[in-house]
Image (cartoon, rainbow over all chains, first blue to last red; front, side, top):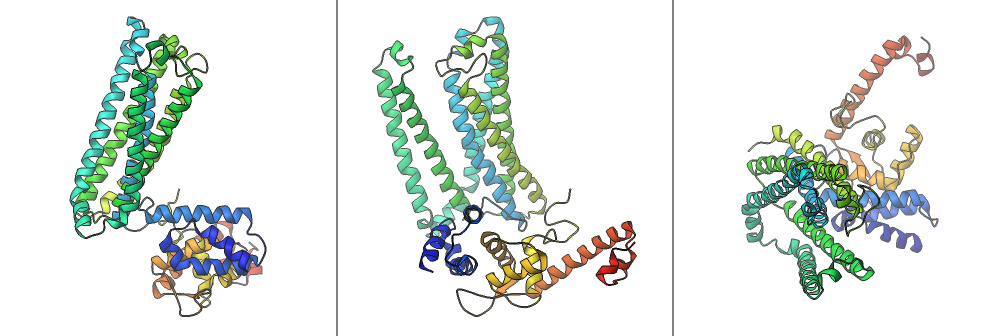
Length: 312
Length: 123
């Protein structure tokens, strides 16, 4: 049974440590009883991986279940918060893509994309403000958490996030210094090296955001938030969804307006084009925003269903 | 569309939900994981994979509907709690009410009167 046990141990790594310490031996015994020395079917291995990840998400307060309304409200707000980085990434890509768009657009065709661009900026500012307010609301509970000596529960997640932030800052400084050492023509010429470095830089930023998101989920899942705080966080989650919707609508309108009235702005863009009005950066940003908006909607539905049952 | 947890078939969900199947199996007495999977396969014709089975066991134990009994740590038997028995009874009553409506609308009188199963399907 040694081989089976080894395989079971590998499969159990998908589950959180606390779950493994309670059910790990039993699940291993079940795998031994069911499959003996034979292989665990691929479908069952995938199922175990999925269940293990689900268990991790559930224990991190991202998944609520059907019970406690406080838990559902908290998990809904967290889902919305975790959707926001998708907009940070997509918004960053959009901002880079849209640089100097007005200079290449005829004045008569500028008003609609200009208005749409302003909506994107306003949505981004509103979203960042809402996230900051949410952090302020949770701050007293976080301070109590630290005073209770529970910092070590978050230390690993925060250490990873800080290390990746340091890497991102170094990469940003490096990119700025590199750009200053180039002529305008060199800076605006697409090269394989430039694209590779840009891709690595983007990956670094995405990893940093994901790490902070993980740390925030780990922290919020451990905080003792009052019913009143959860109600405020829930209202902020609804507001954040509104900001995301504004950013998405503004981006799509800007894109559609330019594709109609000034398609060369899109087709001549240095970041590439797949044809008239079809830019890979905008397609990627649009998909990311749609995914973020969908996830945030799920979170807000969860919050709205839980709020009436919450007691302050 | 019925939502999970508030459906007409009770707080445990649909009749083929792993939670309902596990509680039904434990209603006949304590069982460990492998015995549960085999029993459910026999009475319901449903194969619960190890991940699904232990996902449901985790939820049921957290909700206090089942509890582990003393025994081998690697093959720990579970049994129904009073709350689990009540939850299963509620689900069975809801399922019965639903079956009665279906039988009435199909004119299957024998099912309503509790006649043997073979006779139930004769209108």
